[in-house]
Length: 375
Ligand code: FAD
Image (cartoon, rainbow, N blue to C red; front, side, top):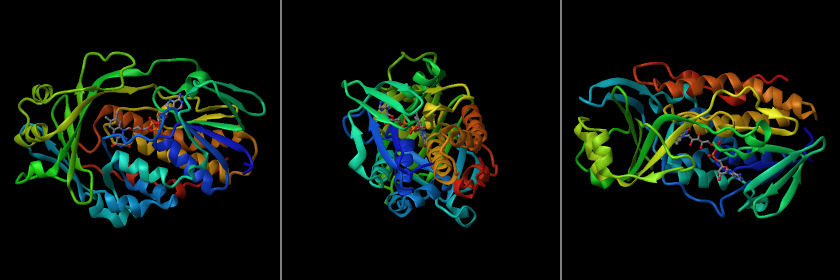
């Protein structure tokens, strides 16, 4: 596509930020809008596999991310009740196979490094998209603050409650999965003397707790859980929670898990949403990526990874396919992404990933730049 086109990206999350960084490197004229008044450092952890780190390499930030993150040698699954090992799967212990690291990192830190790879001259915070009007020649954007803008192409990277998706396909609430997740941060010094695993998922019949370090020095530790819940109030993105509520939920679990709960600071509770796989990823000059397109339960730690892979494939299609027809370009993007994103969505929602020994190379070994691109 012509590099002179003005491309708007709505949503400076992990997917939108990746798209902007890669579009700028490919020579496109991009503007990034986000509703937040400024960058906010979400206090949570995130796991990023070799499939993502190969994209961070293209943004020139693979090394800076690896420098501040932990690189677990193995993924381990353990029985929550008696601690018995259910699986032990090489991650960085098999680095040569994947040709990139598997990192666990503070999510805010990762996001900040990614934003540092973007030319900020065209980043506009405090711009909440309220409406859009797509026509033959471009897309007119209207923001909540009363301002408007015009772009040639619009990328909707605005997450689970995407305004772009609603305008494209009509409003539809995301589906509450009947699950919530607790998140907790722990100062590792509070766990001194305990046999803390680098990257361990604790399982029982209907709930789990994922645990890992957030930094190279192993000073910060983190858990995120999956637990059944009857309902969640519509429109509430998270609420504070308590040690008592978590102890009740994880009653009978291994003493190590209970020690993690005791040591946690600022426990929060989040609803887990999904949507049905979406056949329509684009219309006219508007295209979707990441959670705006295919949100999933986070049990495979691949939601952000799919948003980042989407961004990389979309930019490849825009830069490499010789066409100025948005439909040809976006249809190639959908063709190359839909099967993989839907499969990951399915496995993630089923919550079976790496519970027992299995080969994870179809996820971690994927290289978006190794895909043979065709229109
Ligand atoms: P988001 O990160 O949601 O970004 C959307 C952006 O759009 C935001 O910045 C928002 O402010 C902006 N926006 C929204 N509406 C508007 C508007 N109208 N106008 C302007 N801007 C707007 N994934 C992993 O890969 N690994 C993990 O370990 C992991 N752990 C998780 C744990 C939990 C508890 C949860 C809930 C999710 C987890 N995920 C994980 C999933 C991951 O967080 C999401 O899949 C990922 O953030 C999606 O990225 P995105 O860029 O599509 O959207």
